[in-house]
Length: 355
Image (cartoon, one colour):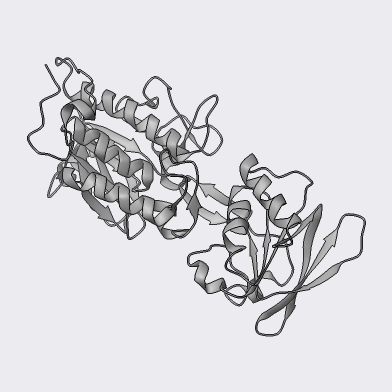
């Protein structure tokens, strides 16, 4: 009875669509395009004030190397392209609001309400929330907070800030490697510190970093950790302690620890979905969760063999959208047609794909 009353209240001024997409990052934006090819409408909800997710908010100037057809593309440019690709299909957006709860109606529809009370209704939900709510993993240094925004940065939004500056990057994953490569041509000095002997990033990036070090374009210090930060109101130097050696003092303008993000699912934990380790378990047939009609794509999902790559999210979206169509039109036969056959996918008069 209480649920019925809630549903009646929620139906006032509700936004109705075919697929509610929770998360407006690259995977969510590509879902709009794939759904548009099947003439399905999408509405995206995102806590951030603009589309693009982490790519737009955290590292818009970061180069990405594993998008098919682009040897290198800046994260912000990729977002711009995805927005342009989805624009002809007129997606709706609820930005600056967090999807808070989900209620299922008797007619197999879902009502998603945000933290600001905005209601959305659809037969399908696609969760494309990336890492969920996230925060940078910080090194354990005594006076770290003192220098935050005064020489210590966790996110690189504009590389030009570091033009002709001395910077020290700590980390051993793709972000640390990619930014070291990129900033080698921007900063006056770049030092990369990694606590292990081997890196965890892409082999090609590791080779490039080793080459830059051998050419003297960067300083590479392995099996070492940053152990102290020095300075008054502004960071002026750090101390690096290599394994079994004395600490080394290095003058710097910026210290950028890139140890990844600590993900938190937030309200998603309350939605009755089967969860793995901070991710949603899905069926790889169509990336549907244990709740029929709710799909999870991109970094937010988990399955055997999962790779957290943007291109994998694109693949997952393609299959999930097909199942969304079948849920809405169970009696129609879905015939796959290539966009080269259909013509311009943004044209309004392209051929109907259902029979």
